[in-house]
Image (cartoon, rainbow, N blue to C red; front, side, top):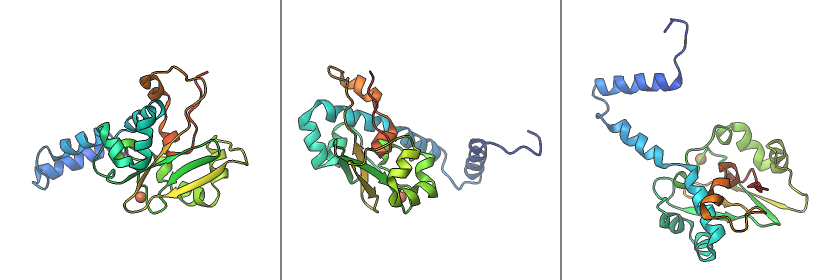
Length: 195
Ligand code: FE
């Protein structure tokens, strides 16, 4: 690499990790363990939860009553998922998640937060003018729909249960899960109809 080039963040992180292990500040294998944990933190897990809730009314009821336990039923539990509260979208109400303090998400079901969710702009503006922020993100809400913005607290982690889209009658749970995007579970998008 030439002297003027700046290494990628990954390359720099690897170099720092190597140095820490070499100097004995980090036990060998510690970072692999962290990586394995991170691999389990995947928003596709949340998509499975949503698809199950769409197809199994009893599961949906359990999910809304105790999000933590219902997510754990599917094997999704762990750090930053100790107290998951599921917010149910209805035709009249759109839920939206933010963490104005920093950028918390329910790791076991939403994974680590996307960059836009961490941006100071989103965190500040979505509370003051949610409709406008949603419009800018491509979601135009009808004026009669109520928007509820949920600010993450120290303990609670939220997951939005979006509306099941039209045109999905007879879809399997797997087919439904494939439609669910992370944005819909944060609340800044609707799950689009496949038709
Ligand atoms: Fe936070």
